[in-house]
Image 1 (cartoon, rainbow, N blue to C red):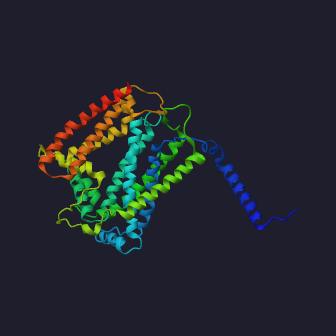
Image 2: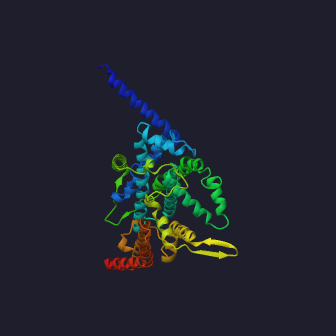
Image 3: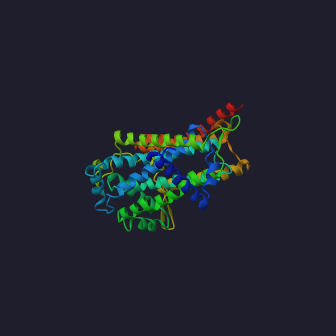
Length: 413
């Protein structure tokens, strides 16, 4: 009998070690009993189901690049801007990492919006996935807030102008506005906002996201049956190896896309804006696109004021905030609201085509039309154009609703 070679002994020893480790973990954690069925769990094969994974890998990129930036950023009002400029011009690879961080945030928000559209228009939020939808909407709100914190941290003229606007909005809130402003800024604006924003940006909000993202993307997904479009028989691909390969391709594609954007397209060049100075005029740069709805709404609503018992309410500031708060509340509770109006309490594992749910689709298109018109207001200060956009806000969403409803019902016949 031939003596085993060194390579054969190494391979045999590695196999025994792997088998022993697997048996050890299985005895104590029961991983084998969990892995056996779940490795063959079917995942939908349609490309739109990977939008959530696109958001997940953007989040991973944010965590990695954010950790790097935290090592060099100085969260002090007098040093924050200089440290960001130093990261961009002196730290090796610093500008690239800043660009990666910004573009990862943009792709993250875009993919969440696209994922929400897919879930909403196909009815994937219905029973038994209401909790998954509510966690997703909560994640969306937290990501928007986290993005605002990140844009404010460089303490440049653009970020400082945004903070000044935020302070004005807080102060317009009756009774508690001054307390909220003092809590955020540590006193009168600009106060000591940078260290507070830094703690919230790198610890508080990411900690909540790190808990909710796995719960939304992994725990509930694995515990529930996946939805899929209507078709003959059982569709989808098994988690291993088919969906694992798709995940690998999606992750590499996400990283490649963000890297290409970070390399070729400049975003937030703080050295052009300069450090924030309250007396200086705001920069000519537009607000980041995901703040455009609030900024546009503030331009569209006239500067109305209401005096009540010696108090003055700034309705021009309050109404846009109340409208957005109402929108996100309705969005959060939409599964329950639709169930209440339709009386549909069945379990849904098959998705709808948008034309099969005319009212829901028409409502979604009307909201998108509304936000598009409001967002367009961020690009102009011309009184005539703004007046036209005010008319459009009242006319175009109902028109879009009626046209979409008619088209969907015609296609459903």
